[in-house]
Image 1 (cartoon, rainbow, N blue to C red):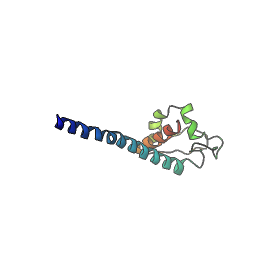
Image 2 (image 1 turned 135 degrees about the vertical axis):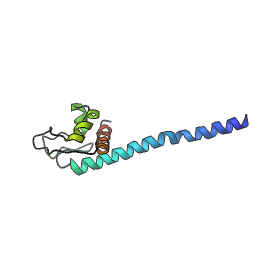
Image 3 (image 1 turned 180 degrees about the vertical axis):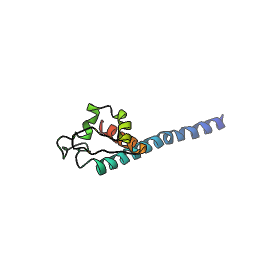
Image 4 (image 1 turned 90 degrees about the horizontal axis):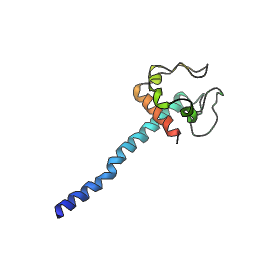
Length: 110
């Protein structure tokens, strides 16, 4: 009985670690996406939670989820975005970069 209680106690002690790894991975992905947004997009788009876009035609990133299902942007981000405002340059991201940028966009929905 005592051995079972010890094993159960040890197993319960591991529970926080099971949820910490995915959360840390998500946070890291969001951070990478924010860096990509600031590096590649901020000259035209407002990429943060507040502020106006430097280019009026460029929608703020925090509002993109109202216009598009951001989960569906992965293909466009990896194959090259050719739409958007008329002066928008074409961007192509690696799949992991596209995932990170989408994670960042989703973080702005909250």
